[in-house]
Length: 150
Image (cartoon, rainbow, N blue to C red; front, side, top):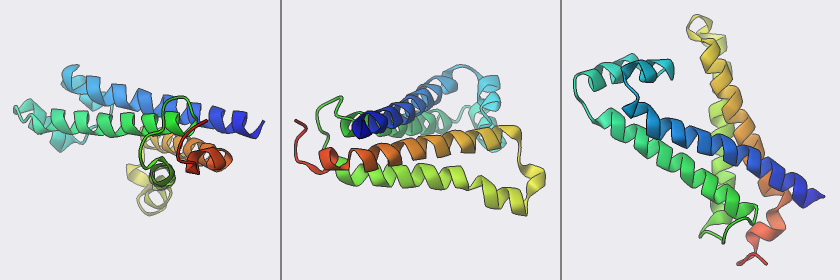
């Protein structure tokens, strides 16, 4: 039962990471309005409008990182072959997601006028992903720390 709960938690986090990866891969080619919809900073949108391709490549790079998070989650859940450094990567991924999710709180307290609904929802999604990676890691730790999945 513990492993099933851990795997479900991983699957929620994996789904969020994959969705995020796809958004980051597709957004740069969907037009400037799409970038604005996803709240890409105005300066980055302006740079993209001026022909600066770095915005596109940064989006692709972030998508790759999110895809790697999903792969590590699949490895931790035992759904794919073990990836090197899984036992190290999963706690780090969990912490990064949880910190990103929690960052809205000090911003909201210090600068409430700049917090939008999108910011709150995005932080909540990050926190859910972090909780999924953390719960999956904790509940599957015995399997994760082994050299190979059985």
